[in-house]
Image (cartoon, rainbow, N blue to C red; front, top):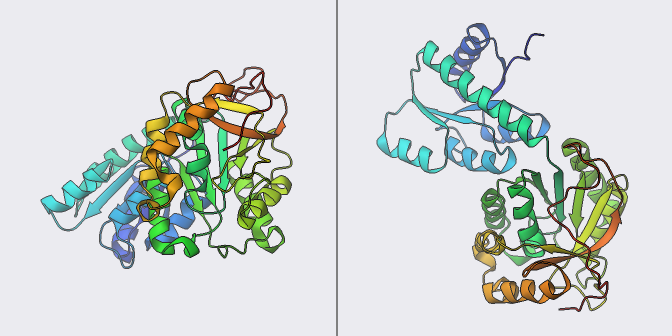
Length: 359
């Protein structure tokens, strides 16, 4: 059977250069090439379909190729990125490598070099994507930037270490709690700590409504990433946005076999977890994710000592020394994608004591 051609996304604002790259990769490399001319269209493209590699220019109107690289690392983790530029600057090369480009090429790039590097990296990207498909697909849904990381940052880091695919869906930019653009970049940086894919919507902060598009947005994401595990807010929460997201997920994730609610700082005394996820070895990774939210460091719940002590407190109800709690909405038995019986989540365990305390 003939192997499917490599799928490559080319991001280049110069039409002639874009056409040259497309022609070389298609005719000499036998690849399937999509071309966009600016960064935002590139982000829309990777959200809509999977690519084996991305080739991007550095200097483009609006978002630069280097900024696009940062976004791609969160939205399309594991996809190799080749950065190109007409300027043979050492500074450019250092910056591209610092931001984790897989290759840095100076224009004009010889056709043979372009085909060789893109094909080699594209095959590696395809293999990584195929390997990641053997684990679970985890979707964590939060109302605002940092909600998910506070509630289950350690659990998500554990999933990532297990080889699972982690996707974060944040439904508002959190404009009431700070500058939306700043918080957006912080959310991308936090997702990048564990290589999670981030979907960030701009529903109005403090006015989220399940009937005003939330359910549809969550359903669309579920349709795109096909999760086997969903985490979201609890209904036992003082914040109206958190309750709204919980209600929307109840509808949108009705066919997902494993759905759990994490604890937010605004959770009420009625929050009653029934599963306790050991996060031993992942507390520091959670703190690294939270540290990305520099605009929110004045919040009491961001204090590393409080984060650690909360995890230690919940540890008394589970098998680990450090734990994140979950209220289970649904935990149906299923066959995992790796072929085993039962749900192979990142060790969400049920404690014998079903009546844990409350923060």
